[in-house]
Amino acid sequence: MATKRPTVPRLLVSQTTATTVERERIRIAAETNREWSKTEIHDAIITIGMRHKNEVMALLLGEQPEEGGTDE
Image (tube, rainbow, N blue to C red; front, top):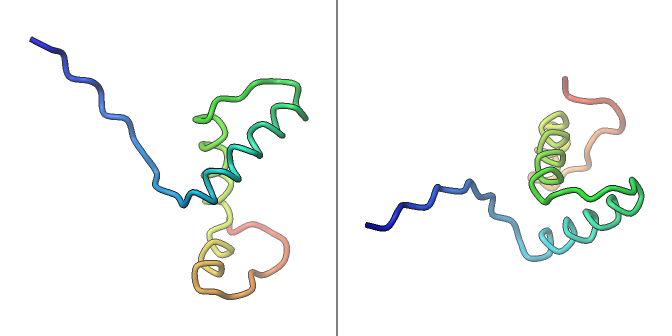
């Protein structure tokens, strides 16, 4: 009997976003002189994004985000 593969959580993004994130992952690795997994980069991006929810909402609504500060 075959074993069931574990479910892997996924986030759906546009191809443009996926390409940009991969390009930035390579740039960050070069600047920090360290390899980073896609999971580490994605976790960091989501963590920072969640600290800036007002900017995320403004982008979704097509508004100009307020300058500076965090939403905490």
